Amino acid sequence: MHDRGWIDFSRASTFNLDEFLGVSREDPRSYYAFMRRHLFDHVSIPRQRIHVLDGAAADPDRECERYERAIERAGGIDLQILGLGTNGHIGFNEPAESLNARTHRARLRAATRRANASLFGDRVRAVPKEALSMGMATILHARRIVMVATGSGKGRCVARMLEGPVTPRLPASFLQLHRSAEVWLDRAAAARLRRSG
Image 1 (cartoon, helix red, strand yellow):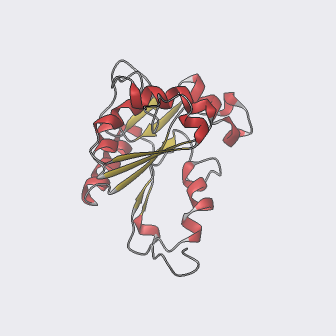
Image 2 (cartoon, rainbow, N blue to C red; image 1 turned 90 degrees about the horizontal axis):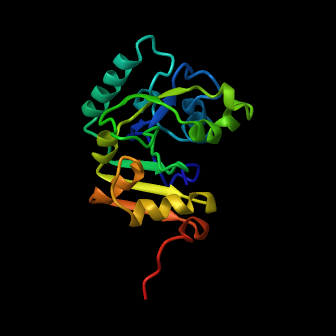
């Protein structure tokens, strides 16, 4: 659509959700590099409007604070696009007794590291053990949220997210509290949902 002139991204701003700790944006395994390959290099978003967490920052906590300030200066997030982790995480907000509200340093669970191994030559041991991630309050303050989940491997999580209680043990369940959240599923991901009538 951009190539046909139907969409202009020149006034858009982007904020990546997360980044691996210890991985620079120039590293082809970074989420920034992924976004460049699949979006940024193909549309008219000005470079100064692309915001990413610096996984190679010398002071990760300070980097998280910088990112929160940048989001605030931009007026917040209009549209947050999310994927669903197989353990119910969104961003790198892993299941826990409690969740971090704002952008923070996160310890990755084994399941999350396995799910990201393809970026690291299918070597789980090469996947960083930590990442930087927007927190749950930062995510939930977006004006609109779209969550996309596909495949039967997400089915159990989708059912718990939509039909179970809101709990930090399933971070995606907090989307139930958002006034304008949509969940887009394929048939396989929706297969475990209870059907009415």
